[in-house]
Image (cartoon, rainbow, N blue to C red):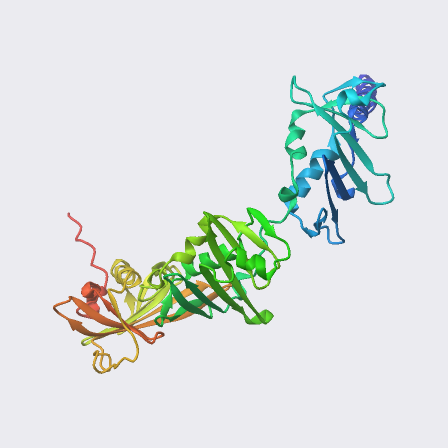
Amino acid sequence: MKSRTLLILFAIVLVLLAYVYFFEFKGKAARQEAKEKAAKLVDVSADDVQAVTFKKEDTTIAFKKDDKGTWTLTQPLAANADENEVSNFVDSFVSLTPDRTVEEAPKDLKAYEIPKMEVTLELKGGKPPVKLLVGMENPLDKSFFAKREDQAKVVLLSSSIKSSLDKTVFDFRQKDVFKFDTDKVKTIALKAKDVAWQAERKDADWFLSKPFAVMAKKTPVENLLNTLSELKAKAFVSEDKKPDEVAKFKLDKPDYEVRLRLPASNQEVAFALHKLDEKVFATTSASTKIVEVESSALTDLEKKPDEYQEKQVAVFSSWEATKLVLKKGGVALTVAKDKDEKWQFEAPFKGAADGDKVETLLRKIESLEAAGFIIPPVTLKDDGLASPQAEVAVTVKELGADDKAKEREIRLLVGREDIEKKQVVVKNASLDYLFWVDPEFLKEFPAKAEDWKPAPPPEEKK
């Protein structure tokens, strides 16, 4: 009987606790939420804002959102908008809680210089727009006097709103006006005061074609393309350039001219940049605008062709190597990685290989750099490559552009040696030209295949 009474009492306690939670705590939270909502001057969803009009002084700035949710500038001109700037501006006004109420029923709004500025938020779904009237800055704490058009009271807004109210048309504009897909560029032709070169993309690699035909370093070429694609306007000089404006800024005979061919979109775009009175002006054949850009944009355009020239004999990462085949003198061997990433002999016998010795040679080959070039036409016989003194084939497994692992083979032939220069001729089988390199790497070749067997463990002492 006592247990039953305790259970009943316990159930009553639970009911009381539930009552307190739902009607006291949750009710209190709801009342607090309603109180905060009532205290807000503006309380709308940023997603509901479809258009904004910002008036200050003699300027009206307006932008609207299209069906895809992208903001565009509509006043004082039609232009692409800076998505982040517009979104941040909207976020500043959709949820506004004033610092305090100054006057519930003001008799003279001119005392607060209201309206000095106006911000109108137009909402979707037929909801009435929200219009905020902003007055002068309070000299005491840098806050702003303001009121909603549909309310009587005057309030003070936090000084943090100042950064939004100081925005100009330029702030809201998209600054990267010459954007293009760098991966779609097939050829580059650059001409400057003391520089001229051309390059072409072949699969994933770049090759210089003028002033000499050699492989190009991928990184500086991609940096150049990114610099052009990401050129940002410091100022908009002309919205609809005319021939006389092009001549005025010397863009008809520019300091720097770059032509890009994008065959996928059947486009050829010519960039023109000119430095005039310490300012750099730019335009393209695909744009109606002339803009001022940062002078740092010229850094990549001023590089000489040899700075783009790839000096590595074979561009790969030694840790991605999965197989190595080499021949030198009477030695011929093949080693490959097993499933545990350990090097194993495949020929002339089976068994474990000395991983340190294999990796050392791979790193030497990876770091081989040209001391000079032999440009076509070349004669393999004259350079000792008809019967090379050594051959190396490295198989590497790399991630492709589609993030899938792909294998490729790098094959090198070692030809004649110049004793006086202490250099040896090397040919990368995938390239038309030859390299002069330091022959030091040849010392890492084994004198016999057994030299690459692991050293036997030392005898244990009794």
